[in-house]
Image 1: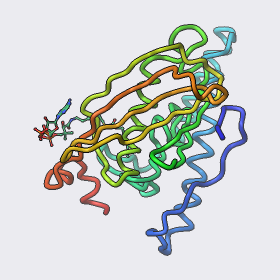
Image 2: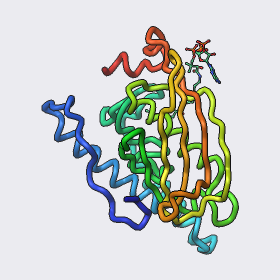
Image 3: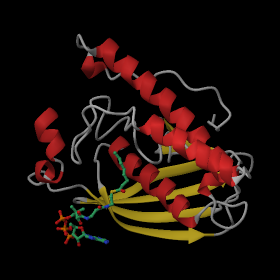
Image 4: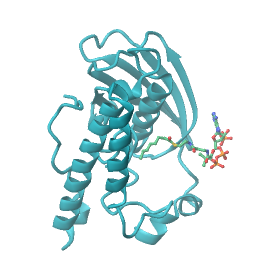
Length: 234
Ligand SMILES: CCCCCCCC(=O)SCCNC(=O)CCNC(=O)[C@H](O)C(C)(C)COP(=O)(O)OP(=O)(O)OC[C@H]1O[C@@H](n2cnc3c(N)ncnc32)[C@H](O)[C@@H]1OP(=O)(O)O
């Protein structure tokens, strides 16, 4: 299972049963619309980094994009605000630059639980290029950081990365379905030890990138200072 830029736009996302309120239908509509826009923006980003269009065309498109951007008016989300459609810290983050269906930066990774952690699937495009034809090393770190962080939350203890040790074994091919694994390997008080790997889906035994990370569950007394959006909305 993976998504690519050529897939049709996905519709909607999983429903959080704790949100069975009068606004649920509106939230689902909002998620579907955010997902639709994210899909089109990812296609724009990919077309932008692949095109060989003339300067005239690029200027014309840039003016068109500016006109489109100016339509996204009205209230803007503040820095610490958690979108109403999110299920922070354990579920969907719709604008995540890794998994967010609404983010033009995200491949986006589809995450599924496994027996002992999480598996992610995605197909990065040329927009995520480092060496010609291969993924950017920072992109691999971002994929693993997110999946490993989510593995902490899935194991019951959301945490923040304090250390991420990366090992790049082979270049990560672009436009190739990838598999990202993450699992918690141990805990010590607030410290959570996590490992992760990236392979292609067709050759899951050949590690391209591996990582070991330490995550820290924030001191419960400081969580609301770190994330004031939780205080306001949850
Ligand atoms: C919803 C899922 C989303 C997933 C997103 C992906 C994850 C992310 O990208 S998170 C963003 C990147 N990370 C950050 O911004 C974190 C920045 N760091 C911090 O804010 C703080 O270090 C914080 C809040 C995590 C911990 O601070 P604090 O509560 O003061 O912890 P502190 O008392 O210093 O350390 C706790 C323990 O961790 C240990 N520790 C701290 N840093 C490290 C480290 N780099 N390596 C190993 N151990 C460490 C300490 O030694 C201490 O251990 P012990 O209790 O045995 O002495």
